[in-house]
Amino acid sequence: MVVRIDRVVTKGGDSGQTSLGDGSRVSKTDARIEAIGAVDEANASIGVLRTRTRGRPEDAILGRVQNDLFDVGADLCVPGQGGDRLRLTQAAVARLEAEVETMNARLPALSSFILPGGTEAAAFGHLARVAVRRAERAVLAVDDVNPAVLRYLNRLSDHFFVLSRVLNENAAADVLWVPGANRG
Image 1 (cartoon, rainbow, N blue to C red):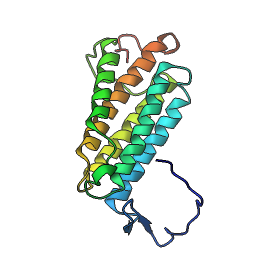
Image 2 (cartoon, rainbow, N blue to C red):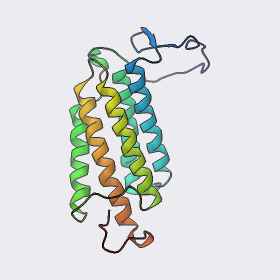
Image 3 (cartoon, rainbow, N blue to C red):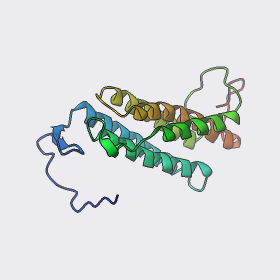
Image 4 (cartoon, rainbow, N blue to C red):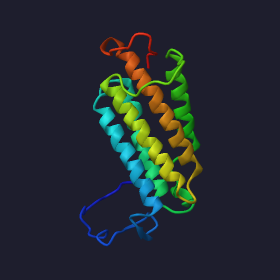
């Protein structure tokens, strides 16, 4: 499906309302709109992370995740089950689970919590993780959501936790580690 946007300024939201995918109008303070905005914010944070992963294998994964989040937004903008409009499936959740397992298998086991940070890329990964967690909480406040969306967002935050550790491990020579602290 090709999307065509002829006008950006429509003035349709000047009164504090916006349109959903089914054409209905709702307040911009509606829980569904908050959830869509939180998903958009998470997607933008991934875009920032991608400025630090260009040319690396992780960048292709992050690009796919950004497209998945567009599908999450499409799911959210249509109240109810949406019929054939639901785009996010359990296959996307399974893909994330497999990626988390693969990445985590190459990392040293954790014996304590870790502080977010390390390399710039890992720090941006942690920001993406918390943005995804916020989006997950916002989606929980919406009635009648595709159940795969909640599973996907839950797995995605785990994905960013592990990916941030991988980004630190890959650049271990450039990271200042505190003696005796766990690497992550």
